Image (cartoon, rainbow, N blue to C red; front, side, top):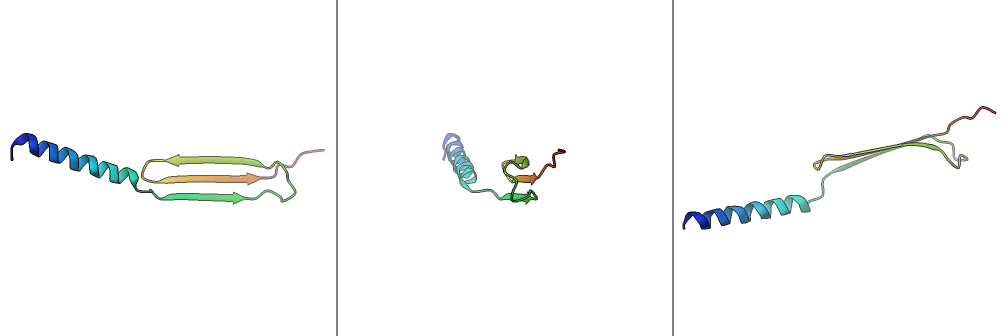
Length: 69
């Protein structure tokens, strides 16, 4: 087997490994902290998400804002 065939085999194996890695589902953590009152029609909300490609984290936090009347 000559050098060119070895390179082609290595390139094909690397491409197949990369494709398999991209096709797998990475773990995701989702946190929801819902502290708003049930009667509140428009609760305040903070939402953030980070996806590193290996791990994804999503956070949602809601609250009721008291208005001074």
